[in-house]
Amino acid sequence: MARTLITAPRTARRGEVIEIRTLIAHAMETGLRVDAEGRKLPRDIIHRFTCRYGDELVFSAELFAAVAANPYIAFSTVATASGTLSLTWEGDNGFAHTETLALTVT
Amino acid sequence: MSVPPVSLDRRQVLVIGAAWTLPAAAQPADPVHDLEAAVRGFAGSAPVRQGRVTLDIAPLVDNGNTVPVSVTVDSPMTEQDHVQAIAVFNERNPQRDVASFVLTPRCGRARVDTRIRLATSQKLVAVARLSDGSVWSHTVDVVVTLAACIES
Image 1: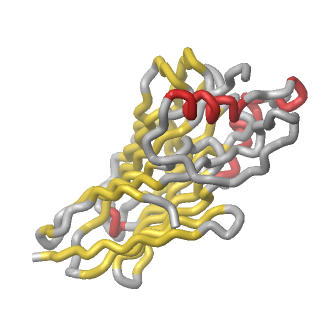
Image 2 (image 1 turned 120 degrees about the vertical axis):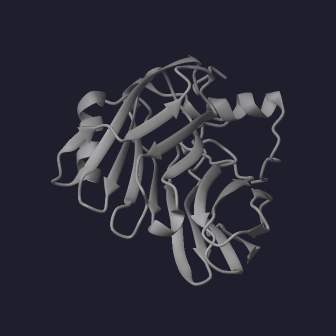
């Protein structure tokens, strides 16, 4: 499991647009670097990020090697009803990480 | 391979910076047309128009390893009129794609932020596909002082 830093409000008014900022620790190895012996270090990046609000997919991103290490993604979503937001990151070599956020909508 | 901590010290930033060291053979032969092809691939048959999209990035970048980028599209984000997808392409990195995002009316606002790597001074393009089928773009020239390409 990787470390993440997420900024999102815990409560919101119905219909309010809230901003979610996410940061996850990951080297995002491009596959172009060479080590001291001259061997190419294989590509190892996070290539997909999704946000589900309840069961519905509200936002997703496809990332490539040009995304900086420790990928930062910020997006917004409409607070419709109280529920759980599920953020998932998928990457090479079976990398998978999920964070859940509880949102109370008044 | 151990995952670096979220806050990187300077030595780690320089090591990761060597990620973009390019052998001469890997340089793109025709970066401008490859960029057009990438944008065309995302736009499909719709004409790509300038406007409605704002690609916000510092015109002068100190460190090409981590460049904050923000793409905002002028759109009400309603069921009838919203942004379906945003893609960012570059001109001179080893690969044209940077990132692409799929939005829904549930986003409320058509804005995404991320941080990217830039191998050298170049053009960056943000393209947005709207629900009415139209495609809009914004191109920005970026100067990079410390490229994500450092002699190790």
